[in-house]
Amino acid sequence: MKDSISEEHLYLAFSHHCGDSIFPLHTSISLFLLSYCDCKLFKVFLVPTGENADDELITKILPHDLEVCLISRHQLPMVVQSCCLPAVVVKDGKFCRAGLSVVLRHIIQKAYEADTSKKDVLELLGFKKTCLKACAEVSGWTRLCEISIPLAVERFLTKSPEHCQTVPADILELERKLGEPVRVHNDDKIRRQKLQQQKAGAKVAAAEGEPVEMHEHPLPNLELSIAFSKLLVQKVSPTVNREPSHIRKTKTTDLPALDHVFAEGLYFTLADIVLLPCIHQFLVFFEKQGINLLNLPLISSWYRRIQEVPGVKKAADKCNMQLLQLPELQSGAAEEQLQSCLLVSGDLQEEHQDNHFIGGPRPTMTKLLESGIEAKFSPHPCPDWTLDWNSLPAAVSPGEGKMSRDRALRKQQQLNNLIAAVKKLAKPGDVIVDFCSGGGHVGIVLAHMMPSCQVVLIENKELSLIRAKERSDELGLNNIWFIQANLDYFNGTFNIGVALHACGVATDMVIEHCIKAQAAFVVCPCCYGFIQNTVKFSYPQSHQFKAILSYKEHMILCRFADQTAVQLPPERRSIGKQCMGLVDLDRAWAAEGRNYSVQVISMEPESCSPKNNMLVGIPA
Image (cartoon, rainbow, N blue to C red; front, side, top):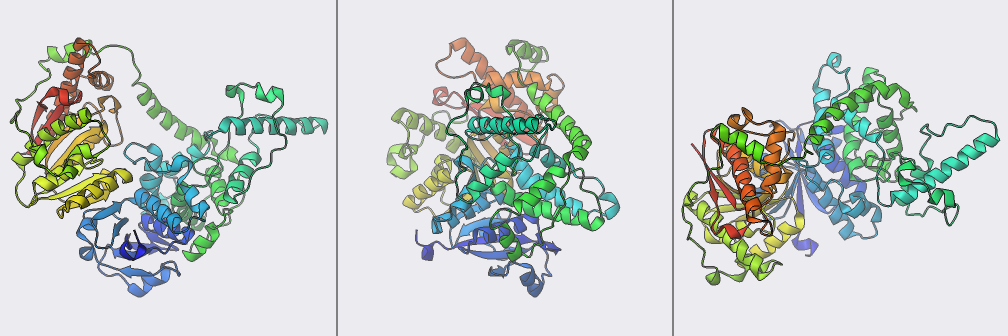
């Protein structure tokens, strides 16, 4: 698409400014990335959260080479009003990207597409271009960078000075992660180089009569040379063409670990861009209060090192960030703080390790049965209803996607069930949200069949959503929006939430989103084996199941609920179906405990999918 017809608007929130940063910190981060990439492809709008924004003051604190307009919340495009900021939308379009990671990754991609000589910009996306791609709901690292640390710093700065003597737990968690061994692509080769370097250093030290300390952590010279050679687009010249035989024969488990240079390991990535404005504000406050940084040596070293990256200081100057010059610190003083952080992490690790167990589901099912609990399925309200697929435009059919004829038929059967349930619930003017929409199989059919309803597709994967929009454009649909975002970044009002095969905990996230909006839901769960306790959810969920089953016992049901594949023996599939029913019964009872009426139904025909349960919930 030509720039002239695809101008994109970037919307950033503004609550206040403190020192050299704009809050919320997501806005400072976005502006810093624009400056680092020297990207002027977006028309930038600042959206004040208060009513008394001083235009002249705001202009002074913004990057001086960036043109920014102020806009009130009610002036935002409707699709943007349904999202948390930052958000990007094509001018006059219906395709919106929302949430920090999604928006930042898009800025990088657009900056590189506009000037493919900016290899350093593309490298921000990391190996296989996956940096901060996993959503915060499933990735602890994305959650730490995108949500936890910005919020922790913002909360920290609003406390009174006497309550700011303790380092926030999320900052300590970053310090701990910077001390973990680095794993990168092809790290075996780099670790052998490091071993050779260490042995050569030890040999020189022994010849000079100095004590040899092989197990200490010297400055990561090899790691630094590799990291900065990549930034400067150079190659590290090996000292020898091939390692000596004793280096080649060393077991992988005996090789030295690689030390962190940047946040994700050896290479400068988007994660560093996200963390810098947050950690900068935190360190500025500490310095003003005269608080010692001895307990954060790794973060301090990272902060000093990141200033050596080409382009960082220039971007900081544009954003009026006065980077601190911190003194060298020793890591020994952090041992006690890190140990406490490790203990907390260890507790969490132990909880997750509890998921790995041996045993079948029968004892757990018997335990429930003794309390009168068994899988219950409501009768299907319209088992024979089906869309006349042959009369529909080709772009409506899932067969338009890259799938076999048999799979397309099963997908049509699945859609028959969901569309039938939604049609019974929907009325003209309703907003229907297709969560985890993928390529839009559900949402596009709903938008075509119900032109009087507004349909919103929400999906984290960009390519899937682009394919969905292409199908929508082919059909000329005017009642459909596309939002690339995690579920949490959608805050619009709606009447019905739909999800076909939302994976694991994502099903519970959809139900939770619907309950908070007092919306009806029609969901078909999937990947029960991926269910586990998260920051937001603990299992089992209903008080009836909690009174009988432990977390471990509930996980047994979840693992065996995935044993429904057609190639498995009939008896095993039957047990899997019962486990699915029990897990979904827990979900239904949990929703009923919040004033919902919920039915667990088997889709018709059951052969349409091994994961053929459907939960229909209506607010009481």
